[in-house]
Image (spheres, rainbow, N blue to C red):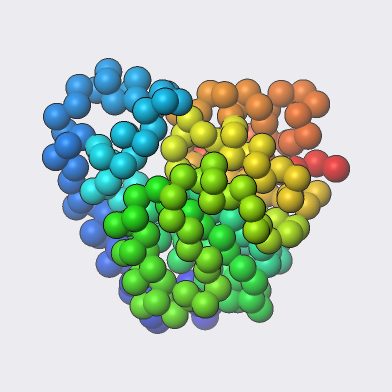
Length: 219
């Protein structure tokens, strides 16, 4: 048995995925689909999108992507992980479980919406994994600009899609050769995909599973 597949983590994750599936956002429902798509790509309005319209939605990784994160972190022996977009902590729990089974480490995770971060903190305490996690509240362009673990072994990008490329720029100096970057819903971030797929970018990258881009830092 692993931390991921045993109590208290396994039953907690099942409960959280069930809650995520039933969550609704009345504010988002009132926004026409075309406007939602425009907001996803707006560099100037991501704070409105995530701080107002999406604040009630969980926006978790899928169960399969969660298992992929655990698998990648375990198989790479990750000790230093950075997550952009905590939400309610589902992906954070998968990553922290891998750190526990790797013998320890540090996971830095950041979330724009403070209410979500409070809930995530409670879920991590319930999972018994909070000692491994550095929770940061605020805009990731500020919260991830300093005091990062080094070298970074694994990154999860799952916050505002329009910021993926900028967040990668912030983290890149701290990435070890062979570091893995998982970008969820990457199809909503064409600038990021162009960045990591370009010849000579310093990354080997490919689409993986449902709307996930898996990249490796070369060098």
